[in-house]
Structure formats: structure tokens, C-alpha cells
Picture 1 (cartoon, rainbow, N blue to C red):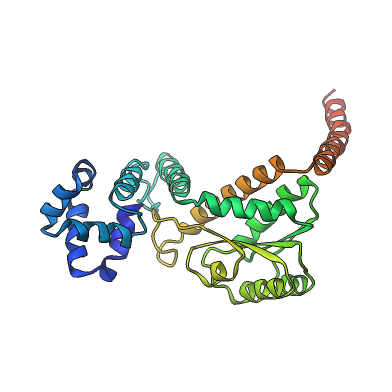
Picture 2 (cartoon, one colour):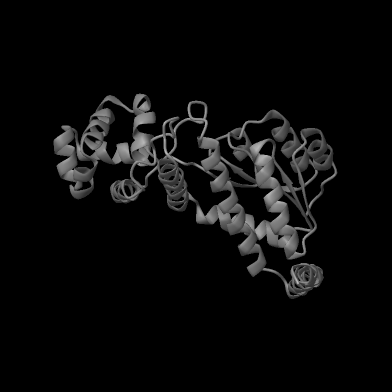
Length: 291
């Protein structure tokens, strides 16, 4: 959420920009309704200062800032309140579902379509895909392997740092690594990515923008969720981050399937038919058991 970004970056703003931040935080709804001149007058700064403030938050300008602010205020209310020991089941449903809804809205508003396009171009040409992640991110890597290999591209997933380190050293030009990290600074993962790049492989990174992993990647996809607090302070944040990563994997998997060559389309259909042949006898066994 943009308001969270304003609070977290407050100390990095100039003295004049802090006046704009104070005016926006005091009445966000009014900031949306006001024009540039009105907000500048309220903050007692010049109009160019307001524009600089908007750009310091990653917005292209005043109108982009207003749009992001409005989108943030439209998020599910109350979902930023963490679960508590005394919460009833109904409270947990509201908070967790609201948090997930806000995560997806935040992701939709911040995800760079050009970055997704670059990643899809790499995946469509890949001769092999390897998915790396550790801990919670290893779950995302496994999900990516499950989805990508259905497209007929040889795909594996590794969560062990020693294994993906060795695997990365064997990659070559035409291979693609999908590296997943919530913080983008895991030393073992960074080492594997360096090895993959040294061999000529391309790397797609799902990580926060501006992190070491994003800097090493051929096609970084920034997962910057402004809605959530620092993961070190909130133990529930990784759940939301993992959800965002899984959705991006879905976007890439669907995009890859839509761009398959005729030959790979045939392989994908063959895989689906093979799965159906496995499931049909099992279904027959279930029916006979019930009978």
C-alpha cells in the first residue's frame, strides 16, 4: 500500500517532501480529490516539490501517484491487523482472506508487464528449465516445476543449496533458471545464479527489486508488496509473499503454454492424454470399491 511506502521512506525524503508526506498521511482521501496546486498549498510547498515527492515513491508523476494511492485505499479494510490469540474462527477468516486479497491487488498494481514479457520470451526458447529456491521459496520452485514441465520443456526443481549449486555449474546457453527468494540475498542461491550465468544460462528472478538476486538476473521480476510490514517484524508476511510468488508462477506457466510451438503443443496434449489414462483405471477402482 502506498501509505505504508510513504511511512517507511519518510526519513529518506527531503524536508519539503516530508511536508507533502504529512499532508497526504493526514487525509489520504482529500489528497486523491485535490489537484496538484491544492495539495501544494496545503503542504505549504511548491508544485515541483509535490512532483518530486511523487517520483521519490516510484511514481511517474502526480497522476500516477493519485492512481496508486486510490488503488491502495480500495484494498480490503482491516486486513493489515495481524491475527491475535483471542481471534475467533470468523476473525481469522476475515483477516487471512483480506490479507490474501490485498496481496493480489497489490501485486496486480505493481507487477511490471514488460518484465513478465521478457521472462516469457526466455521460457519459450528454453531447452531446459531449472527452478531454485530454499525454505518457503523451495515450495514455490516445486510448484513451478510441476507447472512448467507440462509444457513439454524438461524441468526440475532443487531446494537443496548443494544440489542446485552443482546443477547450475552444468548449465549452458539456452537453459533457463527460475530463482525464487523472498529477500533476494540468500548467499547460496546467489552463488548458484552466478554459476548459471557463467555457463551461459539465463536467469529469471522472483525477488524484491533492487536486491542482489535481481541485479544478477537476466530477467528480474520485482515482487514489491508495499501493503505488508517488514517480514522480520511480522511472522505472517511470508505467507502473503509466497502467495504472490505462486501467482506469478501461474502467470508465467499460462503465458508459456499459450506460446508453445506446434511440436510442444502436441507433447503437452500427449501428456494430458497419458494422465487421463492413469486416472481412468483409478476411478474405476474407486467405483468398484463403493459397489
